[in-house]
Amino acid sequence: MLTTSNFNVAASAVYSIGLVPIVLHFSNVSELGLWTLIVQFSGYLSVIDAGVTSACIRRFVGPIARKEMTDLSAVFKTAFLVSLSQGALCCLVGLLAYPIGLLLGIGTGKLILFSSVLFTQFFLVGIFFLVRPFSSLLLAAQRFEINNAVSSFATALSLGLIWLGFRMGFGLWTLPLVSLFQQAISSSVTFVMVRKLDLLPHFWWRQSSNWKGISDLFQEALDFFSWSGFSVAGSSLQSIFLSRFLGLEAVAIWNVGSKLGSFAYMLLSNLFNTAFMGLAELKERGDPQRCCASFLNLFISSISLLSFFAGFAILLNPLFISIWTHNQVTLPPSCTGVIFCWLILASILRGLACFSNVWQTRKVMRTGPVLEFVSLLLFLILSLVNPSLLFFSLALLASQIPPFLLAYAPLFLAACKSVNVQLSRNQCNVVMASAVCFGSSIIIHILSIQLTVALVILLIASLPWFYFFSKSARALMGLHRS
Image (cartoon, rainbow, N blue to C red; front, side, top):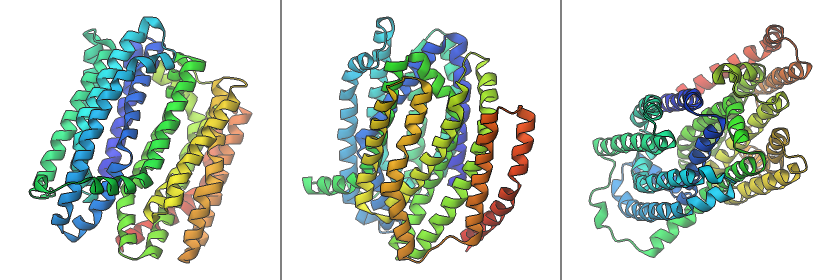
């Protein structure tokens, strides 16, 4: 499932890369910023899920693994009813599309268009909320590979539909049309796979449902909602800050300039999301030591690989943006290094947050994301001293430090100590080599060394990393086979 989910992320990357030239060809940078805001705010409706989907996946894992499908009937019906009400709420939130446009400072000339398209997007999200319980069954069974493959194809095909929509003069209305196409394809495959694998509890609709069942589901969902809810709140805060204080062009510039970092973050998040079910199963079976050791191997390897990528991305990002946008968009050079430092810290936090979910440490699961949001809010307020993309990126970077030191790192260290799991010598070497590789890139970037020479120097500095990481990768594959 990991392979096909990575295909899905790769297809999303192709989609994002192809989207920008198409929009810029038919319109301008401000229109790209408008498109970005609509996509972001329709995505923020995931907060209405309130952690229910994650809680359902966690609940479904045990019965599906034991093949006790009758135990799923009551909780599945409860999940379906909750998703139905959440979908209706999404449609109602669409009525706030116009006030959201005012909050973002959208000009009067584009406000009506923005609010109309955003309302339509909200409505579509609400309708397809009903599919979530069925998708949770597939995810809990770790059988989402067909969905990922079909979704990848639909996402790539959407580029052609976007080009056709702009060509026919639909403009921003192309967005909800493409969303409808993608969601319809994804939902159809979900229903087919659930039926084919016989994962749907028989006669689930006949089960009695009461407020206690809904209350228990929400109580468990709160543990997961804290992260997703405050993550969405933090993303919304960033979008509002960029649009209101720096303008629509700044939204587009930031979206383009941070795209390489966003792709890498998506891949790492996808890796931990996919590993979550397997790690949770180890914990459920009463093997916390193996669970912790497996996570540590995965964590060190993935963050190390990400650091290596970030080192080269710092040097190549300006060239990537220039080619991608045909020199229509330029990111301030001072922001580049900060973005990829943020990428590493944010990815570390994402991995440790996943561990807290696996370990079911409710205090950290609930308070960690709150600390992340408060930290972000505080540093964004401080950045208003000099509103700019540089100070915005510095605020994002600094906001990662308090939750790391005060919440996630202490939990992880305490868990490793409790089950006697420690870093191996080679893992320590991987960490050190990754730090040298990334640190060398930062120094080269600051010194503004010519690109060809800089890449040669960085390759030489990366040789120890290649050696130690290859040893770590072989150990990880051996652990996976066992």
